[in-house]
Image (cartoon, rainbow, N blue to C red):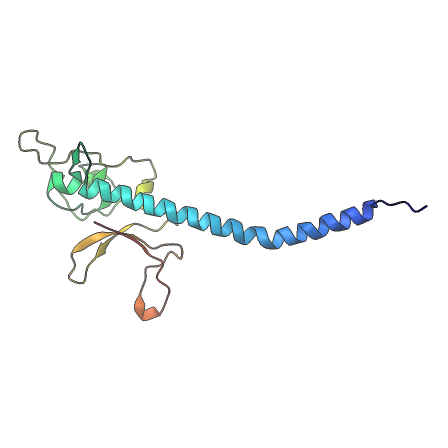
Length: 170
């Protein structure tokens, strides 16, 4: 009578083959899942910044955002967390004046912070560490916000590259 069983060598060979197959298929799947998660984070961050800048109208409330309170778009996104951006040395702030404080009578002025800040100012960057920028129209008008996307480069049709920029319009 023959013994019917699996030897340890056969079992190890099968486990080795399964391990090799898994090593080919798992990294691309993990990379794709990670990339999709970063794209989702970028879209959420752009949407939160849009809400902070232009506000939001809900069923029972109206939030005017920075533009409604101050009367203009922020010159730099750092204005969403402070009305004294000229005092921050790590930023090249285009304006030299501070933003007027909130006036409860006229309902105008800086009524922030409009976004939550952290020491790294992570709200200024997309998940690929590229600065978030305004999306401008052909005449220079501000249309929304944009992220450079997964490749970390801004889309340029002259260079014949793929357009993976993430854009949220106001």
